[in-house]
Structure formats: structure tokens, C-alpha cells
Image 1 (cartoon, rainbow, N blue to C red):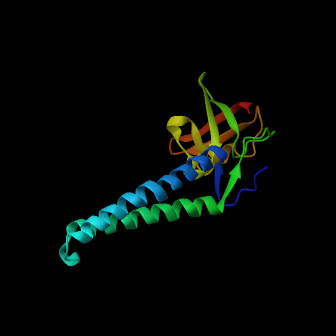
Image 2 (spheres, one colour):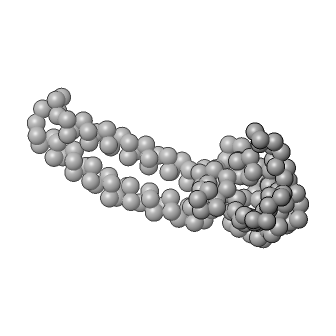
Image 3 (spheres, one colour):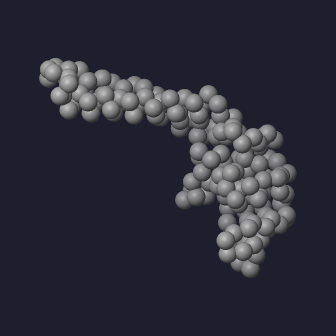
Length: 158
């Protein structure tokens, strides 16, 4: 079971792989492209009024910030796997049903940086994610919303 702390980032192995690939691309392909832009801009002469040079330097700063951010996530993240558990935790896939509805929704509980509702990836820090954590199959959870309390029943836990 994952020990959840508020300042820790949680990512799945798939997200770790994606971040490692993105980091490699940024460090090799993108850095090289910006270095070439900087070399070209330097050849143009006076750097104080060289728009191409200043643009390339700005792009370089943005790129380095992206690299630092990804490295920080990778260095500080706890990798979670979707191990079979009797309670909902990060990495669990849970099927829920809203009270009064026949529709069932399936979500995978993930860390906040990996959340993607379009792909049914629900952050453990979201109100619904928080409500589901620690629950068991067939448990009901109540979520307070601006429209009032909403009750969900956990139909399946994988």
C-alpha cells in the first residue's frame, strides 16, 4: 500500500517511462535545435539588438525549465503499480455508480500530474479521488458538491 503524503508526487510506471522519453527528447533533439539557433544568431553579429539571439535564449530558458521540472518529478516521485488491493489506493482501477443512475464509471486513481479525465484517470487529490481512497468494493462514499451530497457505490475494484 502506498503511504500518501501531501507533498509527494505519485506516478505510474507508464508515466515514468513517458517522462523519461520526453526528457531524453528535450535533452538531445530540442537542446541541439536551440544550440543551432544560437550559433546562427551569433553569426548575425551585434547581440544587443539581435532578435533571433534573444528569441533563442528565451527558448533555451523555457527548455531548461521543462527539463528541470521533469527531473524534479522523476527524482522525487514514488512509482506506484496497480497491485491487487482490497482497498482503493493510487494505481487502483475502480468502477463506481452514482446513486440514482444506472451508468457505471470506471476510473484509475493516479497521482495529480497524471490525472486526465478524458482518459478516465482520476487524481487522488481530487474530491472524488479523496473520497474513494481507502474504500472497499461495495462500499458507498458520499461526496459534498455545490449542488449537495452525491453518493457513489464502488461496484468493482481492480
